[in-house]
Amino acid sequence: MTKRQFVIDDGKERIAVEGHEHRNVAIKYLMKRRRSLLTTRDSQRVEELYAQLPSKVKIIGKQVTKTYDVRWERIGTQEFSGARFVFTIQELP
Image (tube, rainbow, N blue to C red):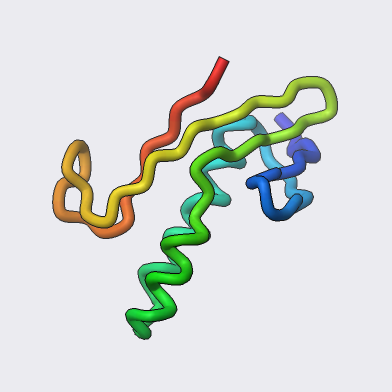
């Protein structure tokens, strides 16, 4: 399966990326945002980045557009309890 062109729209910016599936593209983007939070040492900067995290992400393909609802937690309580800046993603109809 070859990589396809997608556009990630988080409400503030649109980013052109390549990937295999809509969901995988969304997860890769959100993991990059999470990684930037985890590696930042300045607590004030962490608060700024956390406030800017997207709650909805739209992945636009050539034919299909899928929207995902993202729920962020500072400390994981469900599947990854104790992990910092955990997110759950759910596709909206």
